[in-house]
Image (cartoon, rainbow, N blue to C red; front, side):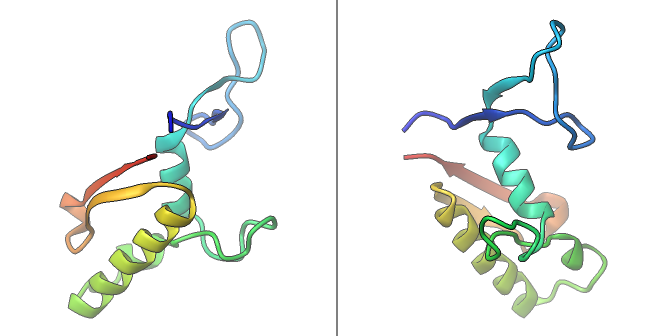
Amino acid sequence: MPAATDLLLGPDYDLAFTEAGDLAVGASDSQHLALLFYTYQGEWKADPLVGIGLRRYLNAPLGPAEAAALNREASIQFTRDGFQVLALDLSDLSAAVLNAVRP
């Protein structure tokens, strides 16, 4: 399946516009992954189970149990969004490994 196409967001997560003033549309796979990371479950009205909530892991000690839970949750969320996870290691967030594609 080719990359997903959707409305694009700017760096501040507001709608992006073209120079002509139209809504920007384009490949959005990386945007989808970022939104999954940054949102919490319950923030998406259409599907309350969407979201990883990465912020709760950023300022807390990330031991083996927490890293395993984060990896498991990320894998579940990416798979639910239609990605095939080829590589995922979030045990060290400063050197995270993520390779996910749409089959």
